[in-house]
Image (cartoon, rainbow, N blue to C red; front, side, top):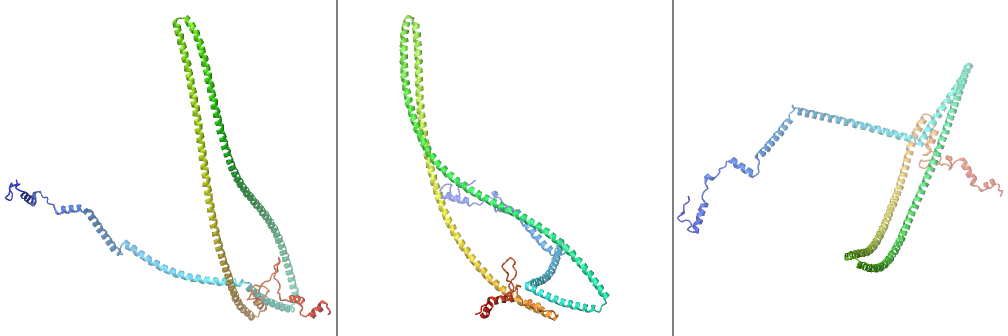
Length: 548
């Protein structure tokens, strides 16, 4: 229990003493019995929980990393081993890769050799084709024909010589041998004649077969011509039908436009007529309404007059009846007078009620007539309003349509203008491109002609070299070289015209035969020239018969 006096002062003696007491109580040491002491592991656990650190997960991650590092390290170590399955497979793969590389190198060498061989074969084929093409030219073929002619002439000379030798040898042979040979020759001649006759018959049969086939072909061609003619007529008919359908379609469109315009005009006319008819109907209805009201008023007036007259007559009858009843009542007793008076009063009440009902019916009729007139007036106003609104809408629609049409016309004119400008630019580009193409074609033609001339010159040189070699070989073989020399002098073309740059042109007649004209330098042409051109005037006079 705390002492009342602290530091020699009484409790509550002064503010300074109380403040000193509070300070002394604040700096007192804690009570160890109320202090909780934690272990280091518990303190670290609390710190980790406050810092959001999960030791277990961190330890698991570290263990996983260690296992991965050990696995990768073991893999690196095992990778170098050669006595494992993976090492043997890798060794086999490496060996296969080396074998494939060696095989690929061998294939490359073989492919290279094959390419070189194919290149040689290609060059040989090209050279052979060039040689064959060269041999197929007219000039070379003519030269070869001349070479063949020299061989034929040589063979003919050899045959003549052989025949002469045989003739000389026959002079020393006996007559029997001569007769036997003649008999054999006659037999051979007879067999040859029979063979010739057989061949003639075969040719005749073949000719007949060919004639028959030609006739069949002509019939087939005639049928094809007829079918083509029918197809042409059918096409012409379809074309005319298409043109007729086009004209009918155009006429139909024109009729539709005309009918549409007529319908529009009729619509406008009918609209005016309907408006006039509506106006007349409204005037007639107004007149009928006025007549009806006048008649109604007259009827009401007549009815009122008639009712007044009937009322007066009824009053008069009542007066008469009253007078009679008065006379009668005077004779009857009082109760009867009362009963009669009551009956009269009831009858008067009924008549008054009947008159009141009639008045109410008249008032209701007048009210319905007034309501009907008001309804007709409202309907007329509504119709007029709707017609006016429709007219305004129609007018607005026409204005919008005219505006849209004018805008479309402007856009169309602008588009036509742009299209014309584009077409003009396109035509200019086309003309420029055409001019460039023509110039390029002209340049190509000039280059082609120049190259053709060079090729002709080279071909002429090559031909002259080839012909000289052949002529030299023929001369060494003791052949007649005149046809070869003549063929070697001829130019390209095979004609009879003058040689120009190694070319001998052909001059053909202008008719259906198309044969080649003769050489213009010949005896005939010289004679005709001599007849038509007078070199010596005196000789010409003598030839024509003049004596002066």
